[in-house]
Image (cartoon, rainbow, N blue to C red):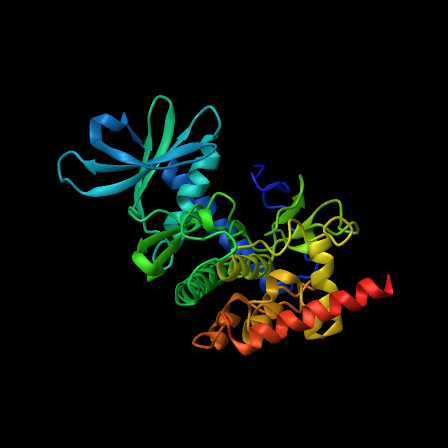
Length: 349
């Protein structure tokens, strides 16, 4: 199954110990077996019916490359639900069942959209039902060049790190963290949840990068020395993506387009700053962040996967200031240091 993020999986149940411990590999294999059993059962219990036979459509909630999400109500009980429909023209039965079953496996956590155990097959689509999010997704709330208010960003960090920890505890790796996959259930991000589990895979599954990387892609997947058979999936991939997402929430910018120093000067600037340890080397979009935020993002965005902090590292930084206040002396000092450093570099040239 090829992912829309430019990644593709190795053959089903293709395993390699690689950097994994035996315990980590065992967790992933157990998760894969449990999903296979659930897929076999769910395949036999799909409801064969057209949408209008069972539900009344209220309004669209979202549209993607492979399908759409509609707010519906049950014709007999009036219960509001979100119905995700995936076109048979672009989705295999196995791919649909996989996403459906992963959602059922994980949906008991408050930070993950609750999936209802109802799978539907129409003449043209596959579909499944879940709790509806009536406030849209996170991408609509992020102001370009500004991000979110710090209180909302910290609420997102707390809830998403907890949801990712839950996924990892089940021997799985989410692999698709981005604002579009974070649904908002209450204003101010008081309640947000992860959705869309089509890219989630058991820990240790071999993964190859099949297309150009994006900001959320971890650097180990982009390395020119990566093994042709792929790398075993690790929770550290989600930690990297969480770091990138938090940067976006706090600044309204991506930190880089792709984590390749030879291709992206913004990523090279980040690596240079990280290596120097000097505040004056801080890349421009980072100027508005506090030392606490620098430390948190430094933990999650460590280019070395085995040194990268787990997603739960976020908890130690909650309740502290992550954004410099506009007009604060510290923010003015940082900008002054950067301007002086730029002048020195220009003089040297």
